[in-house]
Amino acid sequence: MLKYQNLAEVGDVIRAYDFFRNKDAYIQGTVTAKGPIKNEDGAYLMYDGYTINIEEDGADFGREGDIGYIPFETSMDYDERVEIVSARVDEEPDVDYLTELYDAFGEDC
Image 1 (spheres, rainbow, N blue to C red):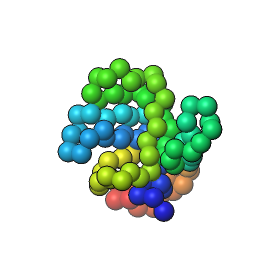
Image 2 (cartoon, one colour; image 1 turned 120 degrees about the vertical axis):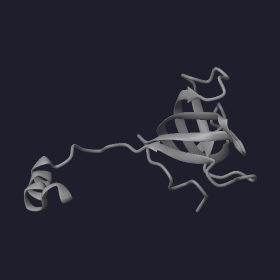
Image 3 (tube, rainbow, N blue to C red; image 1 turned 135 degrees about the vertical axis):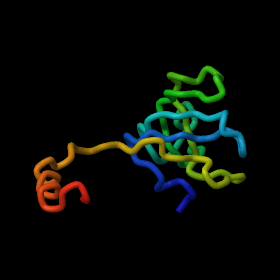
Image 4 (cartoon, rainbow, N blue to C red; image 1 turned 180 degrees about the vertical axis):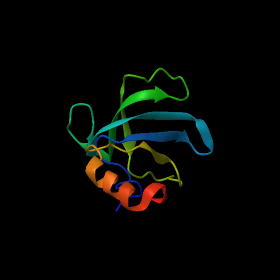
């Protein structure tokens, strides 16, 4: 398994840093796909990773609105190169269940 392969799922928002020890240079966006990243004409596999819609460019390189590719692992990888900003929410909370908990335990639940 590659280092960041199971970090995020489609719909999650992730941030990937461009450089080690530089938290100012990054791309952030919603994961639209995960798996093989191929060259532009699809002729060969480059690496496995995340495909994101870039919503924020920390270094102001003008990448907002572009599609970005984040490898699951690199040859010079480091801890915290990729992180979850927010996880996708699949469904609404079960209000009835939460109400039952509150009724049973009060504010301590």
